[in-house]
Length: 245
Ligand SMILES: Nc1ncnc2c1ncn2[C@@H]1O[C@H](COP(=O)(O)OP(=O)(O)OP(=O)(O)O)[C@@H](O)[C@H]1O
Ligand SMILES: [Mg+2]
Image (cartoon, rainbow, N blue to C red; front, side, top):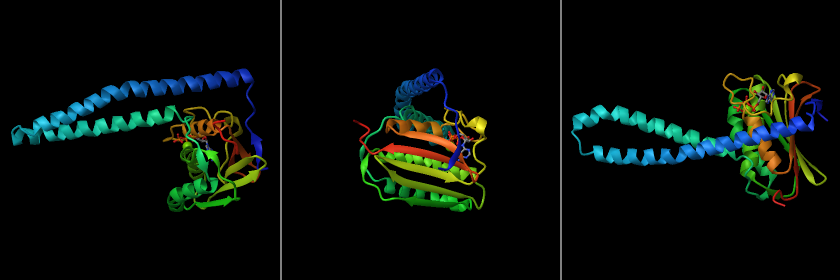
């Protein structure tokens, strides 16, 4: 057992209020993104038509207009990206289960993050016990694990170490992300899963919230703690039964 400090469980009423707040926020984000997406598509189409119309105007005028057109196009693209991101954010709990190999998910996450870890002088290790395939959403699980491992890489300094461990237990898989960074201050353990909670200048405070939504959608749990030896540990428990059932 690595976690010596755990978040103090909140009273059920507080938990329920928080869950309601998260749910409301997710629905608001989704609604807002949908509402913006339609007029945005219309503006996008009309912009393309306008560009075609402008092909017939004087070359001098076209040259004068082109920086403005480029700016509008760039900003339209940015808006579309933001809206798509919000839409994905608003439904992290929508999962699409298929036969999944956890080993492959972990392998892919390591493959994606190794260059980043290496450039920061961080050692990224994975120990994965052979496990059976099980019904899960590999894309979403990867997204959850990426968030945990990115946090760990950001938390440890140069020469730091991040480890992913997967152990098979009776009827479930236990996945841990361990680091040897500063750990999580005990008074913050209860807040880190809140949407928009961040201690980073450039953080959004959404990584852990998204990871938790995804794990919960798999009927699993995600807990955070501090290791006796220093550093943080995030423990994911995933039942081997089909989350759709
Ligand atoms: N491995 C870790 N070690 C120490 N603190 C951590 C660790 N992982 C998360 N935290 C704390 O939890 C906070 C919330 O993490 P979360 O991933 O939700 O948001 P973030 O990393 O700040 O921003 P982003 O949305 O970009 O991921 C972090 O700002 C940090 O304070
Ligand atoms: Mg993060």
